[in-house]
Image 1 (cartoon, helix red, strand yellow):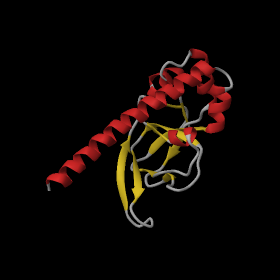
Image 2 (image 1 turned 135 degrees about the vertical axis):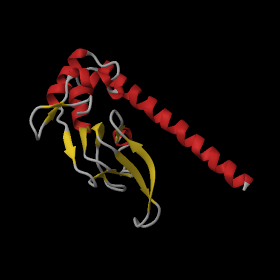
Image 3 (image 1 turned 120 degrees about the horizontal axis):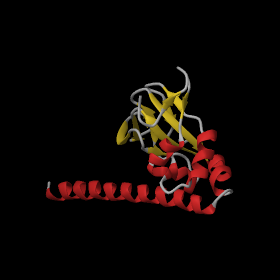
Image 4 (image 1 turned 30 degrees about the vertical axis):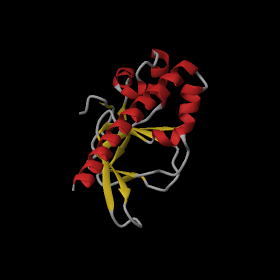
Length: 169
């Protein structure tokens, strides 16, 4: 069993405040907010091969990976060929862009192994965090911004290497 989950029954998993506090998305959240999230959020099992979000489709949810392995893929042409742009494992998350800029998904995400995700809809974030405590909402946005910044640095490094290879032949 992954460190982020507690099995309640064979079909259902639960999260705890301690679990949530270990996830970087919820860094600097107060105990009261963690308790609310613990009671309101429900982990969702995903089977291998399932596409959780699809490039070009609208979906206003953020997903936290509690266990398993997922890949983020981007289509190269009319959907017939894909390139893997990222791998996600426990503690990772995806879908944050849809909360900041509600555009269609920029990539697809699918499970490479049985996985358990913690979905948070835009509406849940609004009612459980934003409407309740602006300080906690600011912590959430800061945590998302840190991760987006980290991803941008990685992407910039990859693009720089590719340009260098192209330039030097």
